[in-house]
Length: 457
Image (cartoon, rainbow, N blue to C red):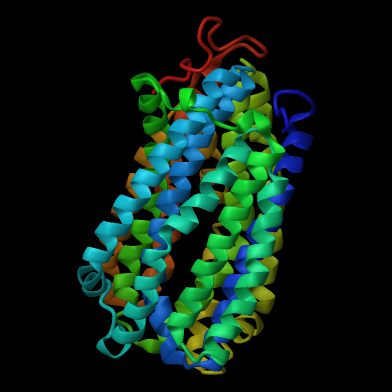
């Protein structure tokens, strides 16, 4: 366990973020390897089938990830306040809500799968492979939820290293299973889905067993599951707020994917590859987002608004340095990176993917600030403003998918995110500066009687 309420803010943030970064890097590397395996061992149509549906599976994974990260904020706040009894009840509530929500999402998604594929405008020639892949991923949602829940609980109490170890093990296993299912058992794109789900099951179960043995403080009794309505309300308010915030973002991307899927197989492959690299380039954004949610949650519980302010400013500075590096890479190495990912030399794929990366990375300082601010706001108690910002993103992407992309084609998709980023950062900046954390006198407690509820909405 790690207390983030003492020590230099930047040092605390970096030590917490580094294992998250390594873990997410392994995940992205697997995603890139998975794309390469499918593209090189099967066909470009197989890769397009996965790419045409990946935004929907990402939506569900993001929903669950946002849910567990939101629950973790409540756990972190009680941990920061040294209230271990309430912390264990928050963990028990997290278990109940995670399992229930995951099962509901799985059932609804499987029943609505044909509608989802039609909504995505998946080309008819890709439907059999896309259906096979997505159905298996949906059945395995509970495995993904188990790992994310355990990882969220551990991060809430300051342990970001243990989830890393099991994530690395699961990623390496996933790669071997990919080759085993696709080349050994000849299961096609379905094999990639089987490999992903099986690796998640193993990683989730091992992480849970280790957590139970390593941290007796986190072991739950029957009494811990006697949870008050107030605790469920707070978990739901924070968890579903963060989940909806993330899902708005992903659903906006899903809306764009419906337009992309009408532009032909080469554009689908180009965008799939570009988004893979975008995920890697934006990796520190999400890492610092998760870090700042936990960091702000613990310091809210400890009544340390001064540390929250300092931490946000330090995180923004680190992100600005990373953005400069990414812009350099995007403008010098994009074609080579796209070829490595797709195993393709088709000019239309390389040119469009490169254009996407060069244009969008020029605006990356904005999404860096967006991710840090909206996760920090969730951590220090403002659930409303991040939702408003994310809703603006959803609305903007839907409008662009409906009206701009059909007129100017893929360039409309490329322009979509920079336009939306500029709009959605405004309420986050205003909301952060107006929040009591930034308006209070340095070092003054937010609320001497109830730090947890002081942030308000």
